[in-house]
Length: 192
Length: 377
Image (cartoon, rainbow over all chains, first blue to last red; front, side, top):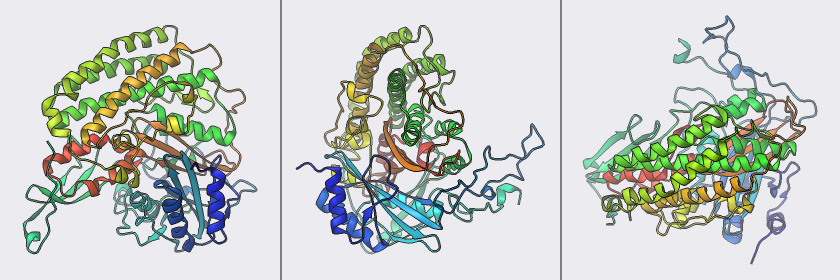
C-alpha cells in the first residue's frame, strides 16, 4: 500500500496531540511541529513501527536567538601577516527586520521511508535555557552521533542518551560554538 | 572464508584485555581518526572511534560569509570528491531562492559529479588494495584518476577544490576540446575496469580477506543510517539519484548496483560497478549536451534569499549528502547543517567491530571508505 506525503502528515496530526503542520516548513517536504518534548517518542514510534520510517536521516537544531555574535571568532590575535589588520570574518551578520528571532532551539529530525521514497520532518521548539529533549538512540542507532553532535555544538541535552559526550570539538574548548551568543575563550592556541 | 565471530565475556577475563590506540596517525585511517580498541587476545571487546581532529567549524564559518563564499568552503568537506559538495549547497540555496539552473548547466553538473564519483572510487580502490596488502592496483587507479584531475584542471583550473558549481549554474562553459578529451578518457577507461577486476576484485587473496568479512545486515545498515555504497552493499536499494532525482537524473538510464551479503567485498564491488554506471551517465550526458546558457538569469551579485528553510540532498560519492539551510533573509546563511555520509558511516564501527578479529579492523574500516574531512567538517 503506497503512502503519500499527505497521509503521513494526516496520520501524525491525528495521533499526536496538539501536533500541527509547521508554519515554516522545510521546503517541499511534509513538516510537522510537535507541541511538547514528550510527544517526540510516540511520534517517532508511530513513524517507525506503523509507517515504515526506519531510516533516521538527520538530527539537528537551530538557535534562533539572533545574528551570530562575532565574539565567537578569534579576531584580535593571529594577525594577518600581509596587513596590520587582524583576521576578521568577511561578513558581519546583521539582524534582519521582520525575522522571527526568539530565545529557542528549534530541533529538527528527518525520517526516511526507503521503499516508499518518502521523507518527513518533525520539529520541536525548546527554550534555550537548559534545553532538554528525549533521545532517539533506543529506536534509531543513527541518532547516537548526531545527538552527540547537537549536544557538542549547541548544548542541547538528550535525556536517555547512553554516552552524551563531546564529539567534534576538542576537550579543552569551553562552550557550544554553534550557539549564536558563543564567545571564544582564549586557550592554549591563543598563546595563553 | 568467513571470519569467526566470538563474544568474550565472563568473570576474570577483564584481566586479560589490552587497550590499543589505532591512530590518529595511522596509514590506513585515511585522515585523522583514532580508534580506541580494547582487545582480548585477537578479539575486539570494545571499539571507540574518536573523531574531531579535522574539525574546522565550517558550519559556523558559513554564518559569517556570503552565499558565494560558502561554496568555497564546501569544497573542503569531502576533498576527494568536491563537486557533489558544491552541488548540494547550490541546490539548497537555489531551492530557497526559487532559481533553477539552465539545462546545459544541469547536464554539466551531472557530468562533473559522475566523473568525480569515478575519481573518488578510484582512490578507494587503490587505497583499499594497499590496506589489504595489494600495492599494485594503487598505481593503476591513480593513473586513471590523474586523467580525470587533468580534465578538471582544463575545466576550472583546480584539481581538488573546484568551486565550479555555483548558485544558479556553473562557473564557466567548457573549453573547446574538453568534450573530445573527456570522450577519449572514457574510451580509455572502460577496459581498465575489467583490468581492475582481474587485478583486485577476483584476486583469491583479496577475496579471502574481504568476502564474508565485516558483514552488515540490511536492518542494521538502515538503522545506523548508512548510505551510499555501504548501504547498497547490504542490498538496500536507496539512491538519491533515483528516489529524488535532481539535475535531470531521471532522464538518464543507469542501474543501481546492489550487494548480496553486506560484506566488505560487496561494498567494494558496488563501487567498482558504480564506476561503470557513471561512465554510462557521462556518455549519455555528453551525447545530449546542447548549447545554451550555463548560468540562470537574475541571480543577484549579493544573494539574500527570502526567509525560509530548505533541505537538499544528493548522492555524493560516499553516500547521501544533505544540506539543511535556514535563512533569515540576510546576506549570510543563518544556519547550515551538513548531513555528512562519512560521519554516519563511521558511527557503526563501534557496534560492528565488537567480536571481530583485530586483523579485520583495517579491512572493515577501509571498506567503509570514509573521508575525515567530511566526517568532522
